[in-house]
Image (cartoon, rainbow, N blue to C red; front, side, top):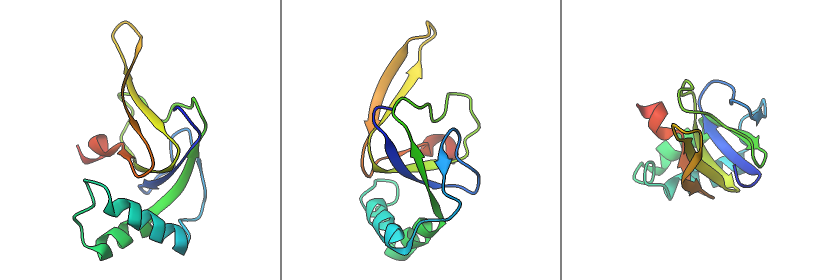
Length: 117
C-alpha cells in the first residue's frame, strides 16, 4: 500500500486487515461507485441498472499506508474498487524480495482475478 486508501468492497464477508463500516455505502456513495464501475473494463459494459445493483452490494473499507491487504495463497473473499488513494500490487519473489507489478488508483479494481477464478 503506497497511500492511505478508501475502497468499496464486493463480498459478503469482512475485509482482511481493513476497517469496515458495518453499514453499506450511502445513496450518494452508491451513485459515485456506480460511476466508477462504469469506467472499468470489467464492469463498464454492463447496463447502468446492473452497475447500480453492484454498488448497492458494496461496502466501504479503508486501509492505511503500508498495510498488507492480502497475500498470495489467502482465500479470495473480496473484489476491491479504489475510490481514493493508491494501492501497490506486488508479489514476493522466491528470494523474499517484493516485486511491484502495478498500482491501482482511483477507479482501479484489484482482487478480481482470485475472486473470479
